[in-house]
Amino acid sequence: MPIKTYKPTSPSRRALTVVDYRALSGARRHKPLTKRLKAHSGRNVSGRITMRHQGGGNRRIFRVVDFRMEKMNVSGRVLTIEYDPYRTAFIALIGYADGEKRYLLAPNGLKVGDRIVASPDAPLTMGNRTILKRIPVGAFIHNVEFMPGGGGQLARSAGAQLQVLAQEDGYTHLKMGSGEIRKVSWNCYASIGQVSNQDHNLVVIGKAGRSRWLGVRPTVRGKVMNPRDHPYGGGEGRTQRGTRRPKTKWGKITGGHKTRNRKKWSSALILQRRKHSH
Image 1: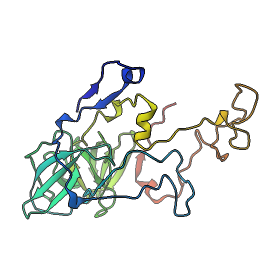
Image 2: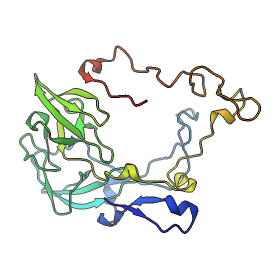
Image 3: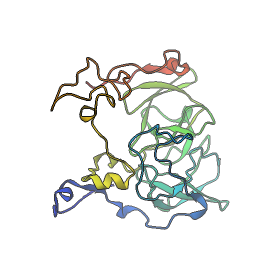
Image 4: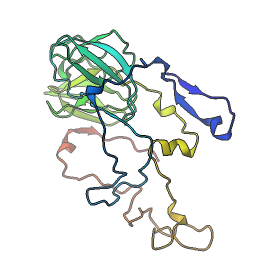
């Protein structure tokens, strides 16, 4: 999907870029597969903010996406390729042979009229879903199950893809986008191909207002706060951080501090940790 630029009619317009949506179907959403979600602005059931910098933004309607694709051995045809305000990837409306319709993650290159199927012996073509054991080494996949029958959990965002490196002792070795290599049971299901909208990371917001449309509120730097509000706060004029190690607003050490539970059960499945950039 190409990136669209604009003539620099204003300072914010000069750098602003968007994804060109003209390749999408332009059809209205399928109402039986949509619902309105209540906006919580980053607050929990007690009304306390647990995720800062959220709130406002344009109203959105949630599309119910089928990540499990448990409709086995039933062929489906792509009816539309649509935008989804709740995710970075595009979605596809599939009409199955039995008359049912479902939304699925659209892989890159999927077009209206294409046919897809989920089956243990499905053809290894883009969009089809099958067990990892059948997928050849070197292939790229997305919407991968972490546990058999658990539904797709890995590689679901725009442009995401995992590469099959090996098939060994009941496990498939997968290389993540981060560089991490981990084992997943080869009885898990995965979809063939890369997730659509791979140019999403090239989008430049361009102006503060556009972030507000997306529901992102302003972020205040810790060094301009008062000492009671942040470990970096206080001082006369521009000052140093004033603390040996970087900390959060609540004084918790960050920047290199390991947070993963050493006894986490899935650690045994990680063959190579991701590479950290410094």
